[in-house]
Length: 539
Image (cartoon, rainbow, N blue to C red; front, side):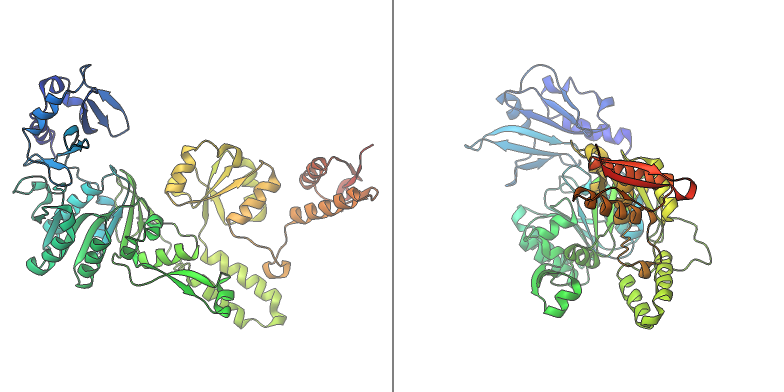
């Protein structure tokens, strides 16, 4: 929308406001304004997208001011909403117990283009898409732009079921922002499910667009539409896919949840309880997109797989997309070496490893150790680690010494995992909050010691040396620390001084620290390659 068009639309809203409110509105500062709020007995407010609140003058809102506005707009519907014909603005009422209007929220509607450029490839795949996100992050804006894209660029028959007239504006003529898409208005919110079915039966749409699916009946109507082969674009109440799964009213949108009792063998194979939750049926929506903020989207391209992973407690990370970037062919643009092999899906890795195990005879254990290690290195891409209050130098040393398939990144958007210091996690750190929104796994260290960082890194990268033979190596530092722990226990139990095996200076330093933690005396003895630690009780 051009600045001139936006100002023209804004004029239609300000025309219904009292003069004592209108004279304080500065059009040049309205670009990021979300709403104008008027409550009886309070100063009028303008609320900006970033959370900033600006007060309009010093006079409080009177009952006459509220009546002035309501007399110039259409009657409120049963959901206490009204609008201004030809615009996307919405005016919502707050009533007292007697039904009198005592407050108004004037939501400013504007056409914002370019918000779906990063998911345009998904919108053109003819798959049903569900948007999730908290109020005010732009769900309706994206529905409006997708409607225009599919109707005008793809030439599909699009019908919008517009319950609150938010998508296509108030009045009998839809707003030009939806392009050639058609709009069906809903007289009362409780009839939305009926209009959804009516749209399919009477108007032969290829695509149906619905805002705010919120009841079980509407979820059932959505399933009926999807089963008839109609592409469905919708939003639903819920911040994340996990929240939606736990919502008994709307969980049917992603396949529904049922309790299943496993047999003993299956429960043992899964390493789970005998009673587990599983997806009941095929999801209504093929793709789920979480709107984390106005510029960041989290995309689950396969809803069925994502729900299965979440129910089984398996780690899954959606694809993070930024509004200001363009993605093509379902993947980010990147250069792939011609000799690179396609990486197996996560769910295929256990199957492939099992195939390898079956080919190995017991006597070939050493060969299997090498084969498995090599296979895991091939199928796992380099893990990118974001550090928060953790020593970068020590992490780099551990990665180099253990030859880990990982690297440190300074950009949270590129990270696969986050390692943070536990002491800095208190107080709701913004970095960790964003990491949670991105569904990144966060691992915490207690101290910035090499031993602690090494332990957490192995946990984060899923390195489990349960067998030296199986994995081909056993960490020297960890072996030395185990030896020191055993010696410390013996000394504490009444034993005399104990000498440990020779170690290099770095490992001896770790052993010294361990002895200090148990209030024991330790000293380095011997020369050169025979230099070692001696542990005893202090005098």
